[in-house]
Length: 470
Image (cartoon, rainbow, N blue to C red; front, side, top):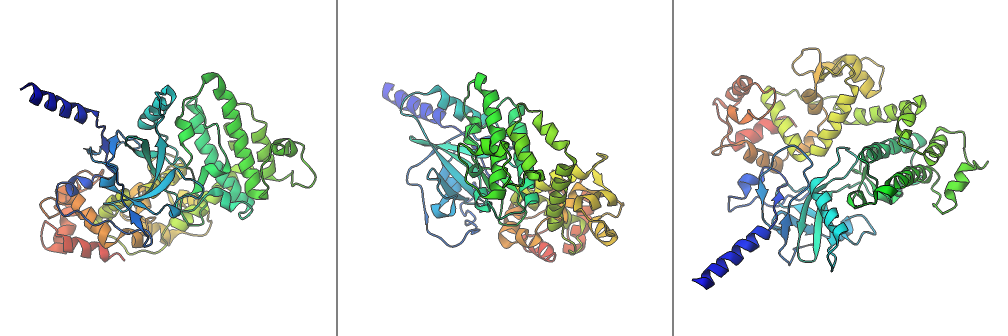
């Protein structure tokens, strides 16, 4: 009896030591309970893959959204397949590329070695990784955290556009300033929380994707979560701002950064364009002494105009000028799919929408849309096309609908995964849409009845409904 009790206690103890992890998407709730798991979606080229040999124990993940997700206790290999390391950022041996087994989303896994001896600073780092996150869209947050006996594995967004350093000397001055505006957006949030990076450089950033929109993210995020002496934070924040100045200088001139670079820039040598907007911004950042610099930069009219012009250019590239009109039920399904598979893009769109909604009424007028697109010509036809309900204003859902990449979104795999998310007992019924805000179930029912001659929809009917939009 004593032996049995002892074994039982050991099993309970081991179970209590296992830390939990939040799932990648809520669609796993159904996948987990079924034997036939959906095959991994191939979003990358056909390459050699290998599996983790050692079973991993998971720990609590960083909360980066307010959506409540089901908690799982399985190991890393349960959710991810490790891809060939050649596809990750170069010169980073502690990082690897992984692909989610259900959604096909590609992520970066950072290997954080555990110290051989007890270390309070390391424990603080792990705690901060678990509990903290940043709202800036230019901060590549840690999404999940796993551990085995030797390491922690931090799962992070993958920026497929390559390192920012590869753009040195290849971009225009206005594009470089636009990139710096994004970096300042990150730093302002970090510094306002009485924190800093401390080792910032141009290699700390990557381009979000392979498009030409110059959208960047801070990928070297671990230093932000490391413990720091409070007495040194102010000086380290100053170092951060100087690093941003040097990044701008390096982007435009393609000159290497040395210990004499700062002194050389401040002396304003004649062989450099010292009167240009970008050079003055470099000097302003180098000489800054406090966080007031963020307000000072924004007060510069020319700087604001450059940033607004680049943002409008980006917005114009993602607004679909001509797409097939959608029924009410198709609109709601597209919104759901976009939030599942292109969450990052949706957050970018929400930021653009809110920034251009000047009167904060939750809609864009024709004039506000013109400003967002940075164009002066008449946009009556475009506005009417985006304004699905014809009320003379564009709400956030309508803006997202005409900015999503339908070709990339509406695929067999994505449709099947979305159907699993929405359906109950192998059918979708109007009440399944109740979780959406401002959703009219009566309109959903009418559209479903017109299309299916029934108040429920099968997988094949669901696929046909959405494929008609291509």
